[in-house]
Amino acid sequence: MLDPQRNAANTARTDADEPPVVFVVDDDVSVRESLELLIGHAGWQPRLLESAQAFLQQDKPRGPSCLVLDVNLPDLNGLDLQACIGTARPDMPIIFITGFGDVPLTVRAMKAGAIEFLTKPFDDEVLLLAIAEALERSRAALAHEAGLAAVRDAYGSLTPREREVLGMVVSGRLNKQIAADLGISEITVKAHRGKVMRKMRARTLPDLVQMAAQLSLPSVPGG
Amino acid sequence: MLDPQRNAANTARTDADEPPVVFVVDDDVSVRESLELLIGHAGWQPRLLESAQAFLQQDKPRGPSCLVLDVNLPDLNGLDLQACIGTARPDMPIIFITGFGDVPLTVRAMKAGAIEFLTKPFDDEVLLLAIAEALERSRAALAHEAGLAAVRDAYGSLTPREREVLGMVVSGRLNKQIAADLGISEITVKAHRGKVMRKMRARTLPDLVQMAAQLSLPSVPGG
DNA sequence: TATCGACCGATACCTTCGGATGGGGGCGCC
DNA sequence: GGCGCCCCCATCCGAAGGTATCGGTCGATA
Image (cartoon, rainbow over all chains, first blue to last red; front, side, top):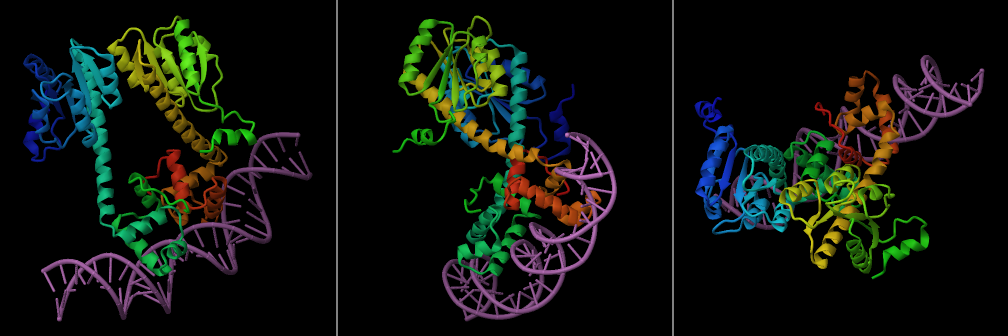
């Protein structure tokens, strides 16, 4: 089987096209070594860490990634680490592995969004499937995030007044109504509106509405 | 604080304003009896069933509801019952209870959308909290479904041509462009468009875009 | 001080939208 | 045949959207 890592290294200096990264955080060295082989053989990049602290010092990879995490760690609890990650990085799904199968722990982990919760010993194939699913979810999250970033940036370039107008426009208010609400003239609203369209790179009104929805802008009730 | 339930009861004969229904499916009669008390005392309507079969013959309540389900049932597996319900009724969240805490089972249940997975014996308070959360989610699902139903009905009343026009309109195409695409005159597009707006009860174009998004209508690429 | 950007405004012009009014052809159903 | 519905088209009109050009105030910043 061809090593995708080498292929990528030959052609690009960006690392976006490298194989997905699979982090393994486990204090048991034998587990790390066996997972390194397993993950590497599946065509992914294994990154082995022995503590939550060491993991948190890692740089975030640009491509899709996931985390195989032992619940019982020397420094930080696996669930706590999940809490840290889950909020900041929805593009790094977690697969838990543990020696002691505890139902309440399982429930907590799954409710917090874990992909899988495996008890040792587990079947390699099951783990690989879980990793594949996690990476797929990571890919989706990254794609979603990338799409959002452009819109967010554009929104960030708007002036307060322009945002105000944007909100009203996507709520279906007419220029005349917006002008009355803001106490300004209709022609000025048109000017703001035009600038909003250009800055947001929206060619049509429905485009703008979609973008506002992506940004989950609250729609004005009087719309 | 005024009780909105009672207010509604004065005016309507619908039963949507009854207290939420909590189904309990467990083959152990002592469990059923104790949960009946617990649930009733919390102000909800307990409905006790001893088998999956019996539950499936129940009518679906109109208001919010949830299901407290024993994994081990005489006839049908709890997980299988979940599979039946989960697809047809996302407005009836499930709380599992079981005597044997099995991690793989827990994972399966949680991945399938269960609210909680409790091992007997469990704290009453924990169950009540889980039920409250489940009912809250049920309420949200019902509200979402109700909002969708109106839009779906309206969409159902559109003729094929009107749906075609709708899709293009919410993609930002101008009447002129739509007319060219369909090989008809612009005036006819206007007529269709007007009818779409009236039938969909959309006052503004952004309204229509929102509705199309709710219906997850695919937006035309050339928009 | 000078410059820049945000914000506001006007006049003019064109396009687009929305509806009213009035009409024709086809198709299925009672 | 009559009826209703869908689909099509035309002219006319007012309202709304969009852009361009010009000009003004204000505050921050170099």
